[in-house]
Image (cartoon, rainbow over all chains, first blue to last red):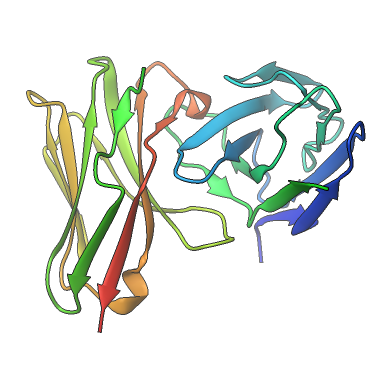
Length: 113
Length: 114
């Protein structure tokens, strides 16, 4: 079955630690995205990538970094510079066209120890 | 400044009745609107969309209505079922934008009581 796989489901970060969230898709989609969801809030865009080896900052990129070395993979690193990392992180993908709907993974809940 | 507003954080309806979820937007450039449904600890799934050239789009029990002059859209679920209990996000974008330009509302939590 085609889809988006995020891992791990739950992740804990210690102070000063960088952590990486995995996102893999087998939908052959060109574009991939990372969103953050906080309780009672909408989804906010962190980073997106429309093509391999290229990515763009979203609305809240500070404290995060990404890479896109393969079409299927778009890992997100939450760095120690992100002072409020506790949130639900969602990865999504779409074909590279206007108004194409997003397909989401099942999310990673990141908490700070 | 919120460009997409879902002013009701929660809604509770009886099974079999109609659920109406509302969404308002402020950006007149928005011309494509989507609804996503999200269960706890899962990713959102696409439900239904509408382009600004239409004022209604229907898919089974789900209908979205768009009132461009009022910058308002609504999602109707008829009849509501307990499995519809979830958080519903409204999202909007402008035609010239890609999916990265989607702006999401804060969501409305729907509870359908048996």
